[in-house]
Image 1: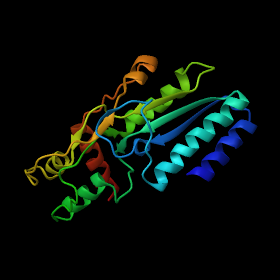
Image 2: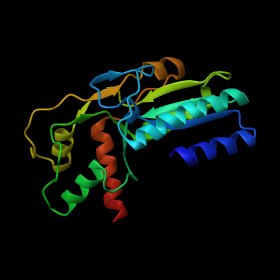
Image 3: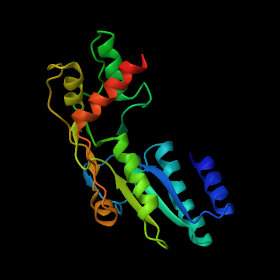
Image 4: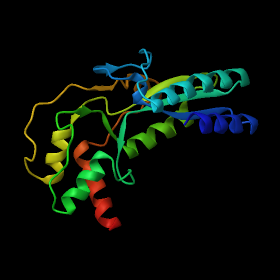
Amino acid sequence: NLRYGIDGLQVAIVAGIKRVGVSGSRWEYGDVRGVVHEDDALRATSAFAAAKTALHYIGAELSRKQGVDFIWARLFSVYGPGQKPHSLIPHLIERFRANMLPEIRTPKATDDFVYVADVARALALILEKHKTGQSSIYNIGSGKLSAVKDIVNQIYGKQMVRTSTTPGYYADVSMIKRELGWKPIVPMSFGIRKTVQHSIGRK
């Protein structure tokens, strides 16, 4: 993530590209609770998060020196068709289709899940509408928490998990709403249904 990210940015600068958008990660914020804002302190607790954080700082400095607009998009928990099989929702779908009980290690967890089409639309707006001469950071998430247990129950179509929930953290998306007019529009129920349909069609 760090080495290839820097290489890619340097290639873009040499090619004369004047606006670069890079995907960061919500893991840069670390293990926190509640709403997180773009200017909150970063607390990388893994090699992946540390690499993303370092790429952000190095990329911003390289871009500044070369007069390149550098936009950093912190993605929260993106889901939808094409997601890696071991991720939560694809795993649940495969277990359900195999008529097997779900294997959930953290049924009490909550997370900010955002549908892939909403993310794609946000990234397109960032590159199309971002004001020239500025570098920015944007959170891209649903702006709310969804419980893992509710996702399990929705996929299985019945009450499979009965438990309380543990507070997580979610994106403050007011900046991208205000500056670019973006907001998530895909409800969790629709996104899961589309993901299930994609999985069935693939098989």
